[in-house]
Image 1 (cartoon, rainbow, N blue to C red):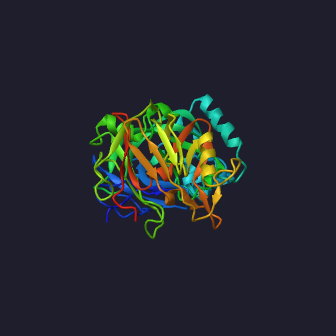
Image 2: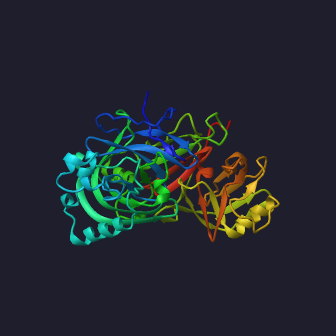
Image 3: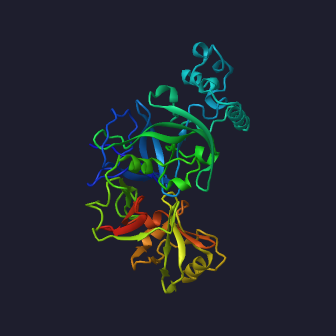
Length: 421
């Protein structure tokens, strides 16, 4: 059986031109080869994120990462994460006798001088480490990257500080290594000399996410905190993929017995048979940073709005985020007060759908079962939040369709799923 990446909602896997069963691979992976049209299945676990498996290094080290179209950095925990606190905080794990005395020999690889950091970076590390309580590691239980074990690694040691609505604060430094999207030998896409962030401290929020090691950003280089090309962008530049398009297909909520956890993320252009119609609609981006474009109309029930709104797609968001005045009207459609906290608790039999129109006349609908979702407390909620002046289209938008992202032509588009049942 082909192996896959897992998207966490937790979802990840990348998909191919045929239906691939989704599966989180936790064992070792085979030797790296290069295939220019790879992909994997995606799955949703713990109602958190869609995630996938990737590998970094030679030989490959496995990581499960969030698939995130709103960010542009690849980051995973480094072996130094939370050093010298956490699992390597014991005094016998520090110093020349580490290999003889420390109960966890991997801690002995965390000797800072071997990286050759300059004094400014050493001070940065010291300051960050001192902020951690003793014996508390946010990276505990996550896979950690070991640069000493990779023959293809080269250091950069540029300081990176990521502040994210989804993940909190992430601190680390950059390195270069081989990154492979996918873990099946006949479907992997291998990209050399990818810049990525080796995390040394992460927020407790991200640390608490089980079965997730890091994040794979799929936005543009201009959105990268480290200033580096995201892996897919670099793959396009290096000719490692056949086309500059990746796509995401997610099944509808309640569509199958796995409750909407299946999906695919192909890196093979527009062709996604078995999932979506070949009648796709594409439209241009309004900015090349995130996947941002203009919507020209919005409908919910009897409410219609023909204003033009800047809109972006965020595969790491659980919600549709609407401008405040639009969100207020949606609440009115449901008979709710304008001051109702969002996401609003609603009866599970609530019937509401959204429709968006685009500059080229295209349209995309979000059906009821993707908007009225479990709230984790035995009831249901409307998967909508409010912002000031923009729309953010999260996972509810990605369900029930193929969404296409073209990095070179700077287009985004959709095609309706062949089945919603």
